[in-house]
Amino acid sequence: MCYLRQVCYVYERCGHVYPMVKCDNPRCKFSPMHAKNCQGVACKQTCKQYRQHPQQYSPQIAGFCPGCGGD
Image 1 (cartoon, rainbow, N blue to C red):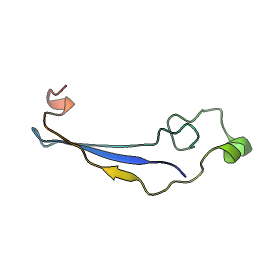
Image 2 (image 1 turned 120 degrees about the horizontal axis):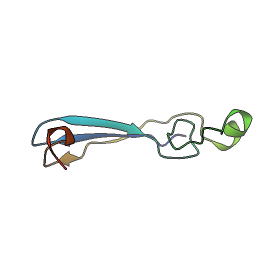
Image 3 (image 1 turned 45 degrees about the vertical axis):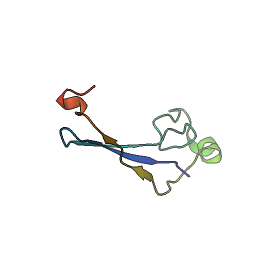
Image 4 (image 1 turned 180 degrees about the vertical axis):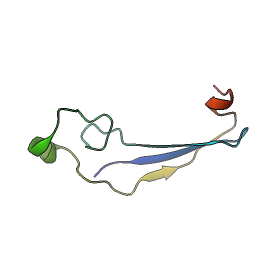
């Protein structure tokens, strides 16, 4: 299964929220790390072909978001 992570960064100083959804497994067809040339039967035999429920968390960051001048 795809190890999808759903992260929602909450910046406390400005109140902005930045969601991020990603899978960083190169053996998952949904991942941006998955090789572009991995396709067809070979991909189905070696790579994850379906998603599971995402891992979810929301870190609270005591600062401004990047758009408001945070680091």
